[in-house]
Image 1 (cartoon, helix red, strand yellow):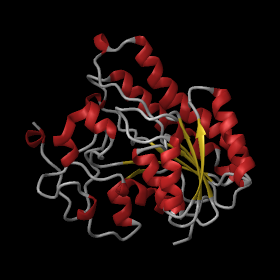
Image 2 (tube, rainbow, N blue to C red; image 1 turned 45 degrees about the vertical axis):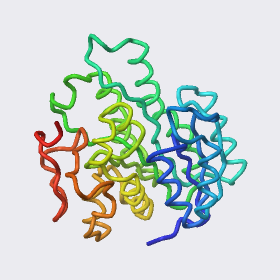
Image 3 (spheres, one colour; image 1 turned 180 degrees about the horizontal axis):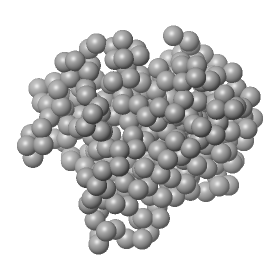
Length: 293
């Protein structure tokens, strides 16, 4: 597998969770990481800041640039990209990880929350990809990776949280269109999504607390899958909507997924948006709905 040593990754929302895990996995090769995220000061409700993330990335073997950036702001994103290019000399990989979530019905969804999700998820993905494009065009094996789901258009994925689902699927629609539009430039554009819930602040604080955290996998599985994506040839490996464990199994040859589990004594909880036809790798068992209560 090709090394990411010397490659520069621009990752939104990389101060914690999946974004930080992807950054640290790349850093273990000696990659350069631009941490483009909002959290510059400690928050009692959320672990990590751009500065603590930079320290972890450097400890993992990479070089880090902490850039305070709100993906809702065009000025912020353009400035963050310019700082990254000035500091590291270019951008090889763009990771659209920043996301906002509110699992509320239409009656309980305030328009300011609706706007936040669209601005961060859909618009932020479009804006960040656009800002990175001039630099990706000059990269040797350029990738855009978006943490968003397969486009499985079923009512069950929208009902009860229409605003969030549309905003999240908007990220995937960016992947669908840009993967074709960027073929002429040899830039790979793919989406990656976890089969199970991932032990992040969103799962603990919004989805299900400690019980669901125990039924989750660690962010490392998504990081390993992302790393495998970056090693693929950009000119031919594009337009894919990948599920983490299936991709690791089918392309990476991974057979054992138990080490990614937070607690092996409880079943794994399924994430939203995973199509029914996407079957888990051999030996992986996902909880039934009745086991989630």
